[in-house]
Amino acid sequence: RKLVGKLSTGCTEFDEMMGGGIETQSITEMYGEFGSGKTQIAHQLAVNVQLPPEQGGLGGSVIMIDTENTFRPERIAQMVKGISDKHGIEYDPEEFLKNIHVARAFNSNHQILLVDSANELANELKNTEMPVKLLIVDSLTAHFRAEYIGRGTLADRQQKLNKHLHDILRFGDLSNACVVVTNQVMSKPDAFFGDPTKPIGGHILGHTATFRLYIRKSKGEKRIVKLVDSPNLPDGEALISVTTDGLGD
Ligand code: GTP
Ligand code: MG
Image (tube, rainbow, N blue to C red; front, side, top):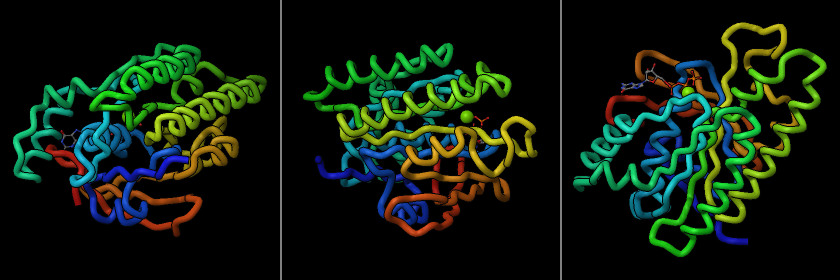
């Protein structure tokens, strides 16, 4: 077993709550309402992971499975500028964009297949300067939710989702990479998906996602990140902000 790496979020409280940062060889699930900031955090991690360890990164590249077409290169450029200002180093946004390998997933089956492609790419990049150190699946559940409707399909959906989660966990192990997935929850109770404060996917997702983060909006740019479940850390809350420069305290 390789030594677990830690990826800084760029937020002091958030990092402290996570025991230093987002861990490799684990799945970190971020769940919350629309607009809570899941995709913003994913973008920031895609930038941070490329930084050297001295700056909180893992010196690696990123594979992003984008299921909702929400990847924004302009946002990456803004965040690279934010990081440049923070560290007093002039980073080139184009260099960062080159190391973010975005794959659109058109449906849940395609999404599942893309993990195989991710493993292939990670193998190709293994002995380069920028091995893959982060896999993002944003959103993990949207396609599954849209395609499997009605009670009779629930078991089938869970089975597929479960297999998918084991595939991505294996990716994290093989590449000693962080795996970050997002999961939207409803603001109001939903007849089909149930309790709004609990992510869909039920207990199967619960056992596989090793770190679960509940993100919610606070005043203005502030967001509250709550560590709900972790194998070795106390539950806690962290206040972060989502600004034009990216994530910060
Ligand atoms: P869903 O995917 O719909 O579930 O939402 P999400 O949790 O992924 O939300 P997302 O990360 O897309 O957050 C969107 C919010 O981030 C916006 O409503 C803004 O509050 C904030 N945001 C996005 N871009 C910027 C930006 O350039 N500057 C600032 N200050 N805030 C931004
Ligand atoms: Mg999103």
